[in-house]
Length: 239
Image (cartoon, rainbow, N blue to C red; front, side, top):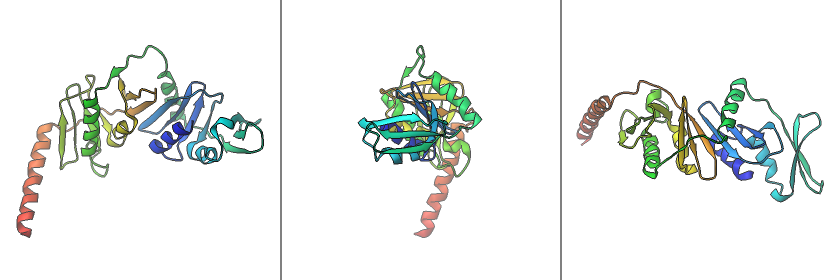
């Protein structure tokens, strides 16, 4: 439980809502969501940072969870009843509730996942390292994924690897792709405006995919040549 909550906090921040349901727990933001298998008797939403801060004072094997009588708090207590604390139950926004239904369907049987080759995962991570940090044009803060190649450009550097995902053409924000290396994902599934990645432990990462007019590679090359010439001229002037 604590390991899963730590992962959610790392990916989405301490204020992220974590929703418990019988088959697992999940959390989501506008561009990135995560689902973690976990058997829970609760169905509620709490702030992940607040819950973690309390759990650190309780030994895992002695913890009991239950909703308060009025449903406004999750009560956390030792099995011997000597210590108890509470975390307020919060409400999720309407769009988050809608997204949560999509997440829950992702643990259903029959979904056709595709193996993510190691070289492709590394190409995605390398491309993310080339994309901009989000201070410029949105397209340049994304990784461009096509059936045949993966590429990224920050308007100064250009990266391309001939190892695509084989389905669709879309862009995924750099910050989402960077998480793939941390999780060690091994499978993927493209479904409309979302690309899903899954680890061997069953953790599913949902990355929002955008259909954008990504600049053609020859435009990158022309721009890079221009920047290279300018950089060289400045270097000569300084000498």
